[in-house]
Length: 389
Image (tube, rainbow, N blue to C red; front, side):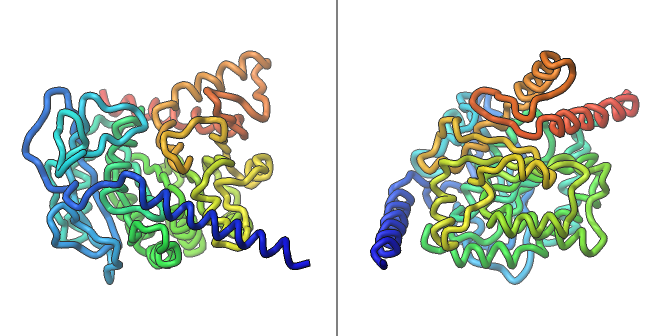
């Protein structure tokens, strides 16, 4: 009678050990990867990333912020160079030291900001460099087991690959960047809810015309919680300034997410939920959570659509990482293909979209709502055009 549970426990222990081994052997940035370099390379592209974080400052060269929690929110501004040979979806990590700007992502300048006023001033200074109608903000909330350098360079890759240009803001909560610190990371994410709300309100107080939120993995927990508490308190980003809310590989219990949305209400603009059934990192989270399916590996797309989501299923997309957990970063530059597929399938069906459409291995459910998202975005751009002339 007890042999099946025993086997299950052994299987879970084996999976946990495998994940620890894979995590420990994977290539990860060195301790000096963020040491600023003054050198530049021909053809390299520069990005200024603003940082809001609940991590503690770290005085070691090339570290900037540690995985320990600070007593409040802190800010920084970082200028990063992307090499001319950059491959979409990838991060060209320095192979030694701070790297070479001709072949690697490198930091060119990093400055701590002491308060909200300085952060907001930097944000508006970056926004004013953009044409009217393109003054957008992308707030990225990273996931579990993520070092500060990894989160910073991932957002830089996303900003460089994205078709929609704007000001990237990294909201970085205190992850220790270790597989075995799942519980610590989960508590850190929970403790960061108010600080993420504070960051969202700062973005709302800026001159940004549109604010998009992209959360990954456990970052979805703190994101949905922050949005939920803002909704309950009756404050938040004005609806006409909200871009997309993208939940990539969400490390959230499906039942918890359902309860969050029931309290939050069906969003006027659907959340975009990116899932993949072969996500090994979410399999680990499932193990820790006692076998409860994570949202990012959920199989009932129709139910998520009914709750108010557009679902992008990447199960059939080949991953660039061994854990199949970072697929979202590979599709950042595919917005045009998705919009073309929506238009193509609508035209082929007399203007009516099927429940699911396919684009390069991706399965998109709730395509009709995605068409509404596209129309809304284009409407905003058109409305902004006269003011830019």
